[in-house]
Image (tube, rainbow, N blue to C red; front, top):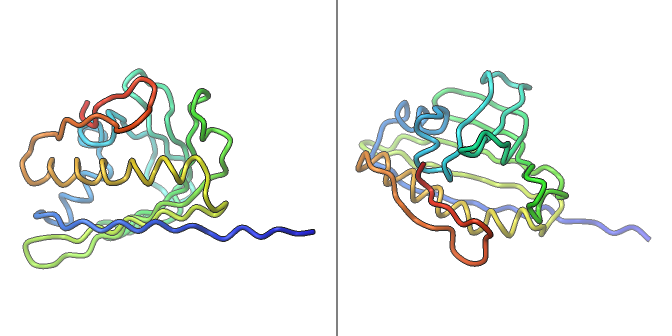
Length: 164
């Protein structure tokens, strides 16, 4: 008997008063990501096919993946795999995150599509909570130049703010 798993897709859209270049910088510059993405910095050479990793403040890899698309300043896509050994999602297969930037006058629409090819997993459950926090932090940072200090809701060992 064969079972089929349907891809689970989460789409998030946020409108940010910023330019496409500044938004791109916030998505790709570690000095900025650590202010809104749970204190993480990025490690990559920004080439299609290259590895990408989010490192926590201690330097431990939180997420890893491979860059699949890079069209500055409009589109970035990479696989997404939690790597923390103690995370309940560490055994989940990789998923795919795509960021698309659309300029709309004085604002940009940022669309984030997260495709979970294995359907509902611990990763999909976690990102459904995490993406709104990350995107709210990104919007706040770009519009006010100050990080949004917010704790992860619910039961997460260690907790931790979005800002670093």
